[in-house]
Length: 74
Image 1: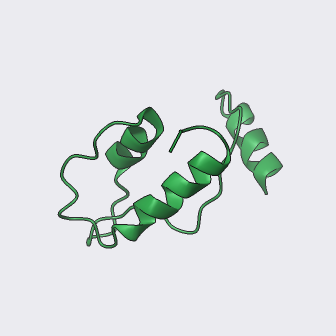
Image 2: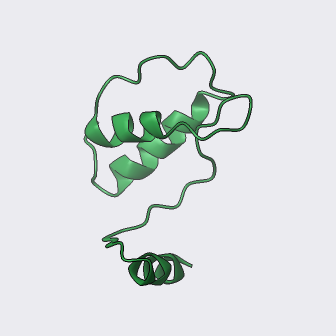
């Protein structure tokens, strides 16, 4: 699956070095993915407003996956 994602991205003209698979993405109650939170996680910045997030535990799951891969430090 990961290689398929990388190939799809390359065919679209995007370079992808790595893919991290997680169970869920941070979504609002209306179902929109909060990309701002993903950027904050990767950059190790404060999350900001998370009041509209449907389940804040998704951030912990993503953070653990990024730490496991060495992208962020504890």
